[in-house]
Image (tube, rainbow over all chains, first blue to last red; front, side, top):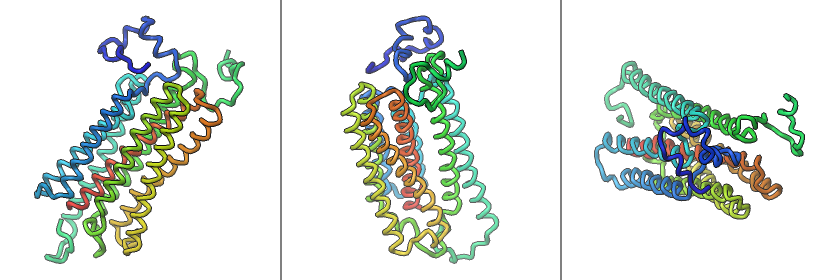
Length: 142
Length: 212
């Protein structure tokens, strides 16, 4: 109950339906997934703390002067932390609901990336190409 | 046969979901959780639209305050810690629930609620401070987008808290029945999902705003 070591075996998923040793723990209680263990929650929490503390520390102490580099680092760490949360807290894997969770998640990630990235990209170029900027007239250079 | 499937003879409480025991998923748990997961994905699209709006108009200061001037990163760091701690304590509540320990589940839920209330309280404190110094949503497109995005997240957390207290009452009344567990698993996903959205908020809005 505490952990499912049988899940660790790759390539077993399609062949173990008739094996009672594998099937019973899945079907004896209502939920077929969503099991975290105390260990997995703590691992996810520790990774999240690091992936949160480092970006805050970088920005608050100005440890790196180059804005481009620091932006790249904090966005990369945010992306990694999202993956950590999805795996360790939401327990997303390829087996849940016959893979439909993973499929809908990947679809959503693609749409979100297009929506945010595409909007920012297009509008940034519209701004820089179509708005004549008076020299020194902007209160915030960007 | 069909009526048996829809209305089991031994059912004593009302059923709010399609019963599909034949598939072995047990009490419609699987389909409910997948449906809720798809709701969360669609909710992510709402936030994607708000993030995109903030990304596009977030530099329109209209001569007003800039992120560097008004954002207090220590406060945001505390808020982030509150939400992250509430995520792990909710995880512990779910572990207690799997062991069918009612008291442990309730205790961890209450601790989660306290962290959640702290988060909403700190956010309201931040908002009232901003409004008091003239950084209102009407001031610039940056502030409009900021209050819309962060406020929508805050409203989600508030409704999550209402749901959480509802579950506390229901656990107190009925214990850890199967339908209570199903609702708890949905709330657990909702709560962790909001923490994921907050990662985007503190990175995209606060940290990126201050270094800009």
